[in-house]
Length: 386
Image (cartoon, rainbow, N blue to C red; front, top):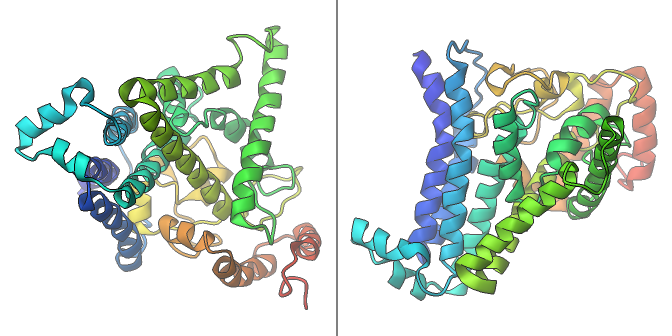
């Protein structure tokens, strides 16, 4: 039934609401909620197979509204998280929820120990990455739609990453899989180094792109017209709101969640293009991205998984992306691959054969020469023929 193809994308919202409930419930419930989210993605992708369906959607407006709903959802999740470390009861939230449910959330919050607060940071950061960044990725590609751009940039503000709407769209998509792209990890790079390097270089790239745009329009670089400056002020405002809600503890908690959410984006960048090579003068093709069609990842991440088609045609809405089952494939679904990437020895053990297969099966003649140069710089013995 076609309605199921609309409903499947609401899995994203269901996971967000589940996470918020776990955060508010406090204590072991927060940790249990985190484990449940991990199980949904890891086990779900492992047992539910691939989704290669390409239905025709006659009411795309419904799917756009689904994306817009991410902003109020993320605001509620982050407010709930900040509330858990606040003194008092900001906005009377705890008293209202206790009266509504009969569960004493204030007592549960006060009894929550630091290991469960760590779980709170992890699950909130996951939601900032999944509810915020993934949705914003889709929305900020819609440069013709001011509403989508506005919502997308505010979603990115929760991870201190509004520059993504500039660098990703106008930089990454132009230079992907080349040495000029901050988000493309060269062969042999450690993911933790990549998080820092890509963040710094991405901000520099966004600043240069914005400077050129302002120069073309005859507008001052250091002014309200500068989207990089406005974006960072948006994030600063959110830190200020967290402080107003619960003081320094709440502000620090939010910063930790935001930085984890930002790190997730860079881990995803790392695994989507790791080891790829391309001459920047040649067109981007499906072979220049690692793809996956795992069902749960696809449904809960608005087809971000179909990354090969996305980079071949960045303007195509998520619901119209094709699965490209013959494209180079990731290790597994997104969360599975994220967890593998965070263990560098395991990552290189599993990805080195994939990179070698890419050179053999996907690379053009020119790209094989670039790959040989990348192998020589990689420091990985198997790629260097040692």
